[in-house]
Length: 95
Image (cartoon, rainbow, N blue to C red; front, top):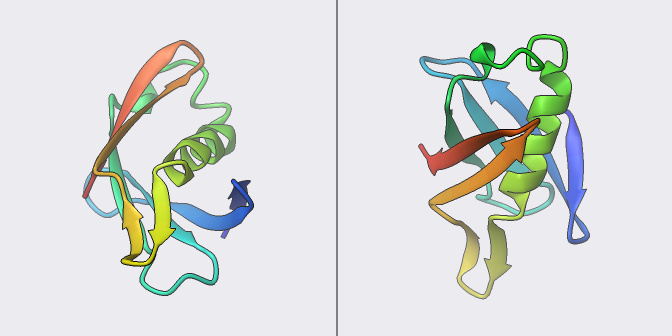
């Protein structure tokens, strides 16, 4: 699985293709931190996506990782988030 680092924490991520596409992400070394985000709009309608899919998912994972906290109550993910990729606004929603 590819990885990104955000705020000193490593995260593993991948595209989940079951049904609608989603981002699966987890904080490395943190039990029970696996999470799924569905995203909108469909990136296939964006010209840059088809030649840069790996970059799209890497950038989305960086933004999703910023929605993670690991406090005394255990790992938590925000329910929603947004990010901009090549001029298109994408929304993330917990699945």
